[in-house]
Length: 333
Image (cartoon, rainbow, N blue to C red; front, top):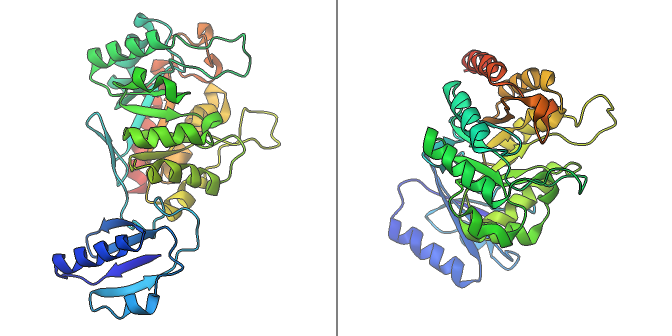
């Protein structure tokens, strides 16, 4: 249920209403927009008397929300959410370029790539320290050492870092990581989501390989219901019947998620296609669709990469793509 308040009401009256709603056992999410204040009620609202609320002189309207996701629902929060991490803003008109290698392999590699992508306009460095791999025999990442190398790259370039966390037991290792990434395979690891919700750190939540948008939003709800409003949604492609590329990039997810939710939406064209030459056109299509940012894999030597070299751009290729992205963004303004 949402309650829209009238403009220019007495703050004391507003707080009195909020306190009364909380006394009914409800959670209250307050969204102060430029033109109106919306109170989103979370919990069992079946016993709430809508007519009583509508009769209050400070209330403009009362509506029930049928969707099961509440906190991330745009009806609860009409204004775009802006997530800030390491001084970088994502969402609400702030476009964010995230780039870096699939996995951290050495100090020389991660620092070199970090400097290159920053020079091309990237504002956040990505790099996997813990790698969930389909085969148990594949490279699983440098783990704690990888995180330390990411921190060195951050010190060298000033770029905030994002890296995937696979277990809540590793939270202490990620204390100095600016954005925690939840990978596609962990999108419905609800125990992990609850703990990340309690952490209060920005979370980049990737859509699962075969998950609907509603399921993605319900996973975001786990984070937000646990107290974390710093959530970034990521479309990274889903499994379809195509046999020519890794996944199918659902570009239509971008405008639909923006319609359903106030959270920022970024796109990962690297995992969506698995083919480096397909990353630029898919990245440009995501920008045209209104994405709040891109996360792209860049490696200084893709042929010898320990993970996902086939989908990684070289620094010079990323630089060329970054220039095209700027042109598309200017064209759609």
